[in-house]
Amino acid sequence: MEKSETRNLLSNTDVAPEQYSADTLSSNCSRTKTSTFIYVLTFFSAIGGFLFGYDTGVISGAMIILKTQFNLNNIWQELIVSITVGCAAVFAMVGGYLNSCWGRRIVIILASAVFFSGSVVLASAYNKEMLLTGRAIVGIGIGLTSMTVPMYIAEVSPHHIRGRLVTVNNLFITGGQFFASCVDGFFSADKKDGWRYMLGLAAVPAFIQMVGFLFLPESPRWLMQKGKCAKAEKSLQKILNDERNVQNELEILKAAVTEEEKASSGSGGGVIQVLNDPAVRHAIFVGCGLQMFQQLSGINTVMYYSATIVQMSGVRNTTVAIWLAAALAFVNFAFTFVGVWLVEKMGRRLLSLLSIAGVAASLLFLAAGFYVSALHSPPVNLNSTLVKNNSRCSSFFSCTHCIRSQDCGYCFKKQETWNFTASCLAIAPDNPQLSENGDCSQNAQGDFTFAPNYCPTSYSWMALAGMVLYLAFFAPGMGPMPWTINSEIYPQWARSTGNAFSTTTNWVFNVIVSLTFLDVTQWLTIQGAFLLYTGLAFLGFVFIYLFLPETKNKPLEEVRTLFERGWFVPCHKEKLYHVILNQTQEGDETDEET
Image 1 (cartoon, one colour):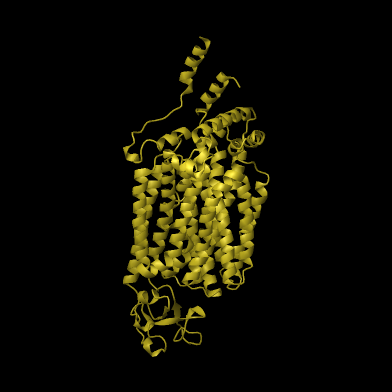
Image 2 (cartoon, rainbow, N blue to C red):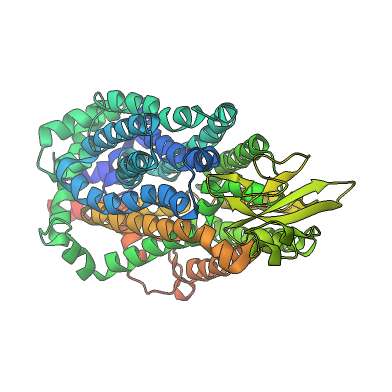
């Protein structure tokens, strides 16, 4: 290709040779019509997001049945939830190495196979140990998928819709959570085997993605980085809708690889090289901080334990609690569409700030709802000391204090309006839905209801409204933005490692929050737990305000300069960056003629 021809191409695309990945691959054709094949790639890639959402969301409703079926105490419930995110954390880091060595396509196929096998194990589980094993296998698939899919989509997407297409992956995640909640609702009536269908149905989309990716191309950028020029050309031919652009894009990729090797000193983007680069180190700090505060704001507490939280708010019917959890998942799914629409209009920074501010306010309202319910907690008014072996539970004088003990439950009979005849009784060791003895035991007669983890209240609406508000603010911003931003703030040579760090951070804090939630509600009360998350969300707002620059419509070269200006964004002097080749082209050609 002639030098002047290269300049003309770069002038048309408004990019420098250093700008590669999503921007470089598609900037030329983005001026015309975006290839339909890009949307096919996004769809099959985002199935991984659907599986991510389904397997993290399905446990909410399934746990209500599982804790009775397998007699699970709080520790086992937390283990079954947290083993998935624990394995996801480990294999998100491993995924960085696998992506560098094997490529994005192979890792996605591997993740699909892992999802499929884990779902089969869960559907056939006959004890809690096998259930734990199946959840661990699924966690491996989630870890590989969560760090690979956003990166793959970003590398094959046109820059003008890159943020939107990466956010589509998050749309599939919330869609998977909503679908999982519906599946929980449909099978909740089957107390014996309903949970098997809930946990096993993920095998279907996993198989579809695995088969689909056998026919989809590898990232051309990764292929070129590995010196596989012929395969990169074939991949470009599938992705681009204009055959004439393929050779031009191939030349740009070659130039980008050359510049990358200079920038990375030929180290291949290893951990040491990444941490030694000040701009990349700064980007990793921001990326990991975003993922950390996404989890510390309590989202997966709300999603994993949504049905349990609904019960805690006073909804006592199990099926109703599961369907209300499904309605909450739909809110999360619906408001993710708002994020897809706003991300290229409002920008990443402002959307994230508004989102986490609303999240903090919603958590405060949620805490207030549970506090008001606790203030109006129904009393214990029967002399339960007459019941043998119940001396500890008989010391509690209200429902709130009674259910805070893991060993006690509230046994009540509604009289009229909100007056109750009630006692605090020990939970039966073989069935947590019954008392060991007394009016709510297996052999008792009378119209009494046993509530081991909730209090009847007329203020349930406050907790439900708080959760709806929370998801309405979280879904458009703090849900997708950490994934979208992390897919674009690292240079190509550091992208796998940078995403491995940030995704692992997400899962580590996911483990911490999900593993401690039920215990925190015991220590601080449910309202105290949500007050804690309110404070953490406020710290997240401060972090985003101070450290997150805007990356909307920024060429990759400029994204790097954003992290070279200094750590505090409010101190940055905004300066529009443009690679203006048209202005220098005439001068260069004059010099050549001279």
